[in-house]
Length: 220
Image (cartoon, rainbow, N blue to C red):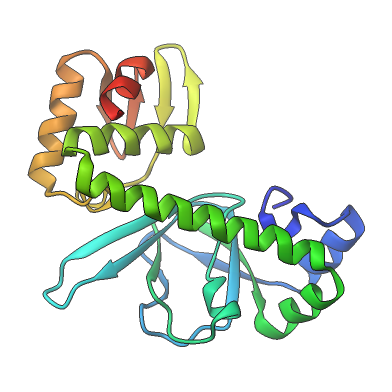
């Protein structure tokens, strides 16, 4: 929790007081925290687990915007720009959350401008990542996007093992395809190609990356 942008500018005493003012939520895999279009006035920080943020088109297709893990926050747009939620938040693993409402956060920001600066930096980072994802959809082929997504997941959720880096992403094949903006068949073909080259090994809702450098070159 101390790694979260909301706490980064606070000393231990202030961080402890803030945590006491926050509410806790527990979600099982598949539980929806809020839907796109819901009214929202609460920011959430992930304590354990993973949350997927997605949007659904009028014909029912879903696109995943992000997969978030421990220490990451979401829902902050509703605090700075009150209005309907722009995405649906769903747990992809058993998840523990801490939430803070608009009134409590406003009081914190008014007394600690350094926290506001950290939150704005986090928003800028999120916007930068969104711009990169849009550019990838236009300029990068599907295998390149798959390689880049796997490296990003490895950077945040991977752990070194004897044969490489084990990335327990908790995503189904369909969810991984939604994350890179492609069909499941095309993504599966890319993964099978990477596996046949010895770059990775597929596991149940996980992947063992065996050649990081090859994936990095393919992601460029």
